[in-house]
Image (tube, rainbow, N blue to C red; front, side):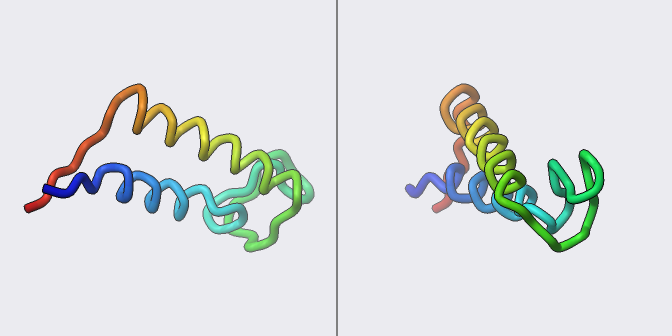
Length: 69
């Protein structure tokens, strides 16, 4: 049986935390901007740190598993 938990969690977090898609922290003019489809180096760094923290919590600390088959 395949464990699809890490794959699903990684894809969902990647889509949700893509800078500029839903939100951007920090934004160009404000701390948080929503749906502006623009990004900066600082924003990419902040979103990468948030992504790493959340994926670590979900996969290592909680241990999300989805078995198919």
